[in-house]
Amino acid sequence: MLRRWRIAEAVSFRRSSTSWHNERPAETASGGSSGLAAASPARLALNHWSLSGDWTAEDESAQLSSAGGSITFRFHARDLNLVLAPAASGAPVRFTVRLDGHLPGHDHGIDVDESGEGTLDEPRMYQLVRQRGGAADCTFEITFEEPGVRAYVFTFG
Image 1: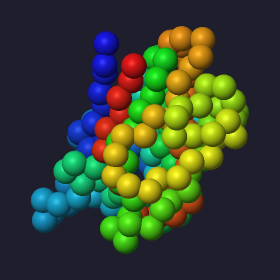
Image 2: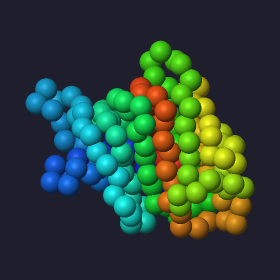
Image 3: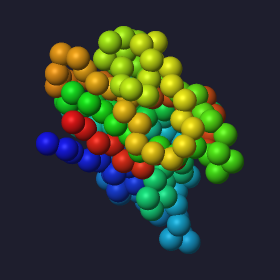
Image 4: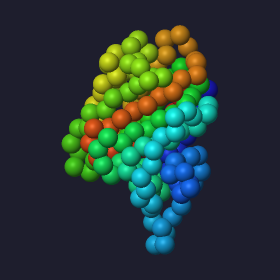
């Protein structure tokens, strides 16, 4: 069964704790997007995710405004995929993936090597995790080295 989580529909900023959580983003007075800095919590509940760094929530995506931002997701599935696009300039963006805080090793997806390194070079779905032992609870984190990345939707297999 394929499951999907849309980034823009699922993101919200809770001002009291400066963390993103799974709701619709607050809109600015102009009705546009929200630009907010956030930090990931130490531990996420299953099927919850967070953004760390300086992100802008838009109607269809979240865009990273400065280098070093990350997305963390606690999930239960064999595969984790994420639809991503590079900055408007089209310049490739290097990223690093961690599973439960460690290198992915044999559980890396086709777009990541065993050391967790990958490159975002075109708008498309990236397979980031394929757990060789089958579906299991796992905390995924992706960190981007450059700004401008857009994240759209998670899918799972």
